[in-house]
Image (tube, rainbow, N blue to C red; front, side, top):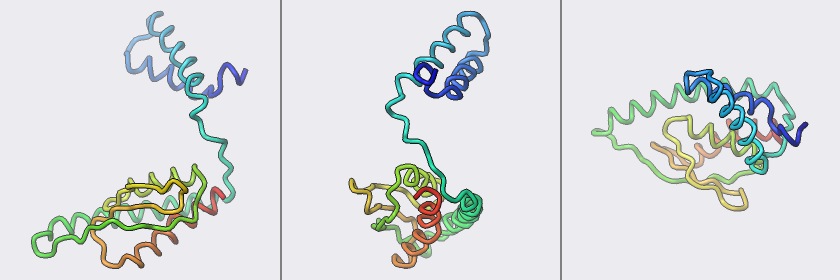
Length: 162
């Protein structure tokens, strides 16, 4: 059964999404949605990552609230920097952050975190996953930023995934 439906919840979600987007439950749409829900996971089976093993689930909640707090603080900081750009232009720069996190799922979560926080952009990851190139909107102290980044985001992700 797993060979025919490698991701049954994804198949069901695709089928329902097809019906919702077409606003119709006609026999043709039911069939096309079922074909999509059946074929798409089969064709993309090789792209699915390895199963995730979460080591410390309690850390997820702490990281969630930390990221939420940082999103709010960064929104205000970026807005303030834009509003005061005439008096003090932002000191944008690219920085290289050495990484200890090498798990693919952890790196994916880290990329989402840096994308959602205003003022930071994930620019490039070294092929050996040892260095991350980030663009920071307004940077006062590079060493302090790297230490904060590693302590606040990388270490909890290492606890969760490695």
